[in-house]
Image (cartoon, rainbow, N blue to C red; front, side, top):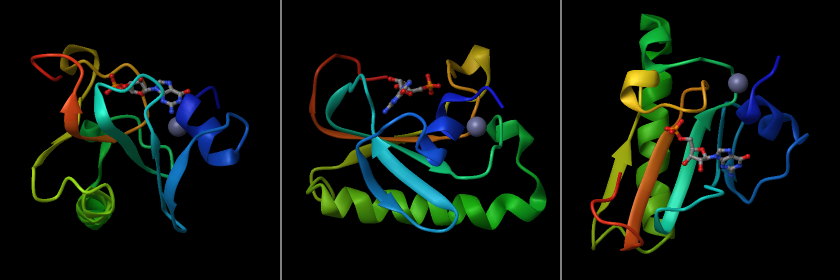
Length: 113
Ligand code: 5GP
Ligand code: ZN
């Protein structure tokens, strides 16, 4: 399948990976909006948030829990951070593989995302 994030999961496209387990992967955004900008994805290909089934809702809980853990690891838990999900073209989603943005620390642009 022609999907950048699936190619990152398979290792075909290299990434600066900060976390992975059997169903989730997190890596640094190639074009960061802040000093911490991570992308957190399910390894399985789910195109957008709108495609999420009821059975897949617990997976979203895991993604959010991992975002919180990574915020701690990055030292931005106290200062605060954004967790953003763009859904579909109208929601600003450019890569059609469900992902969370974890953004915090020093912002490079205002307003951030
Ligand atoms: P979206 O606009 O779809 O919510 O965000 C997609 C994000 O993926 C963007 O912030 C973009 O910089 C990032 N991105 C796109 N291609 C790559 C890539 O090949 N590697 C990494 N690490 N990030 C990417
Ligand atoms: Zn994919």
